[in-house]
Image 1 (cartoon, rainbow, N blue to C red):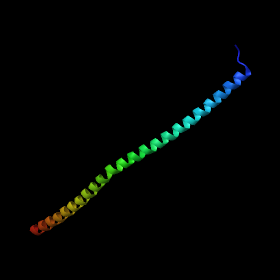
Image 2: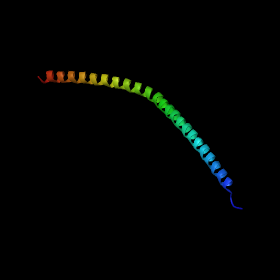
Image 3: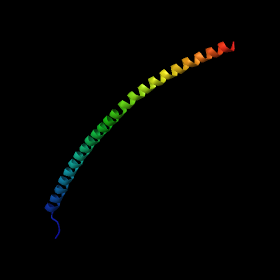
Amino acid sequence: MPLTENDKLWITKQLAINRAESSADIQEIKAQVHTDVEAMETKLLTAFHRWASPLEARFRTHSAALRAIDEEIEYISDRVKALEAKSAA
């Protein structure tokens, strides 16, 4: 049984409707994926910031302590050099 022109027109319309619905579904999925990715990035960056903040504070504390130790060592070194110079003279 061959297709009539009305059958062909109906099939064409149905394909167009299906194509439009599929396109809308794809756009909706893309929007949801984009939203999910942004949320994931935000959570990841927030978690990293929470992890890095205490680490950075500890780093600053250690840096200050090391600077103080370096200054003390330099002071002691200068005193030893001065004492050695006095004893050599």
